[in-house]
View (spheres, rainbow, N blue to C red):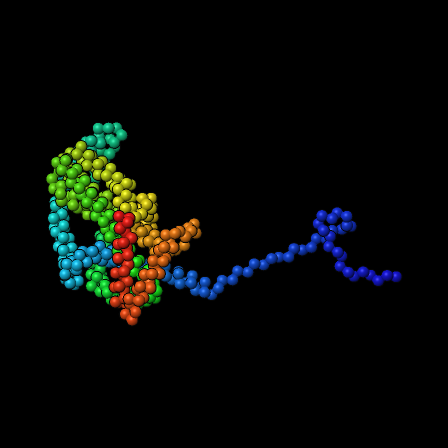
Length: 416
């Protein structure tokens, strides 16, 4: 009698149909473990905390950015005076005094006249409203609007918009306060330029001082190009308004044009601040003149935003026109008016940092010019370390900026 066979049956292949029976073995479950390193968690917490602090301190950051832009815009004038023997403190005092006097003169010359224009429109409002009602009543499509124009109740409108007006004025007061703070901060930064620059260079290793100084020099160039672009578009707007209002026979054309040129700095809402006084001044001269002013101003605003701004800022900041237009749209979408104001300098700075820090992009390969630039950087760093051996950071920073400025001039000459 044979002993029972206790061995496990052999596995039968799935494709084998000859066996008496086919045993299906259970599949082995594959476990994937995802482990996050503690340093990664700590980095994510730091990034989230940093973003939260940044959003909470956004007004302070904007004041700092505004101060840097003011200092960068007024810096060339201060340097021009220094080159002619004026001490730095005196040069800064002269530049800020001229800026203050010019601002006061602009307000004194423009604001009273604009207030008079508003008063004139308010006094003429009943006659203008009746004229519009008669014009609406002439066509069947707009006849229903005639009674609406005659029965406007300003008391209810004022009550319904009181909260919005208070909110708007509170924002204006905050904006003015932040603007004044940015001006004083720019003044103190220009007075303490050497110490602030020395403190910045003190926390950066000496081997990176030349690269840092090149970034600072290029930031000055970006700010200067942005200011030149703003000045160009504002002057062209003022000139267009002056010619248009003069051709239409509207008085005080120069004052209204100057105000419109200044208001053109503000993106998106600048169109309303610019067109408002011009249309108000044209209302007493009939519907035809008012319509001509409105249509031509609207056409120029479209031409400026679609054609002039990309071309002017593209040349001043060395940005493609498509990048200029996309940056304006993205900045306005994310941060409103402030975002639109800062979009172009931020875009130019980002591209400059990618270039100067030599960030390796996935689709780029090293070119012959990049190798030559690395050789020049290494030579400049050796020369800088030789010249600044044993110097404090404040004195060394001045030499680094001087070397980078001289090198930038030699690099820009062939392009010019």
